[in-house]
Length: 145
Length: 134
Image (cartoon, rainbow over all chains, first blue to last red; front, side, top):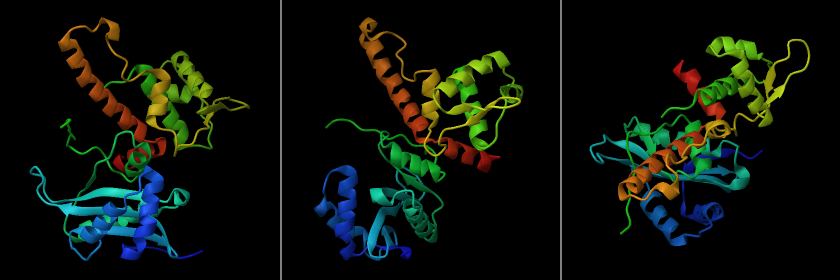
């Protein structure tokens, strides 16, 4: 059994991350992920782009940051991207990624983690629920432009 | 948000069974615990059995066992057996006024959120929540 570990994403991981995301969403977004790597893959104390590995294979990724005082909300951790290789699900890769980013948020002194996702994304919603996350006291709104 | 009595009874029952998956429980035990009439509960359990969430236990005493997958079955799966969230109060053909249509949009928004919430909570997650809040 190869060792499983979680660490900050490196440029060399991007090909696998793009592939995982494309398999889940059906859309290949190479430029988007290159930008995520540029903005979140460094050593920024507030931004995190982590990957979970088994050997050299990326099992999944998570992206998030500490956001300060959005609409009066005290600083909190935000997770805005999470994906696990479909054939690596139910092996705790998502749990390890969430635990790792939550630990990074805690080290920044925040005591709350939030996320936002489509209400028909039942797979990922159920995952976050299983991790103890509940509805936040916010309502997401939108309109056509 | 209010659920019908049958729906709540079904949820309590299926969670009782799912919390002790190997154990067979009689409908009388559950009826006593939740103050339900045994006759009423029997109908609810029969519906859960038809949905393959419970199986009838053989042998002395009878009763039921949980036969679903608590990591896969959601609260919405159980609720949907007994009631329909989002059923319009007024038939679409009868809603001709602008205000009726506008209010229907807002109510539909609430229903969609309720459905997403119920659909994202598995029985295992709800049992975990009950344990952590105990």
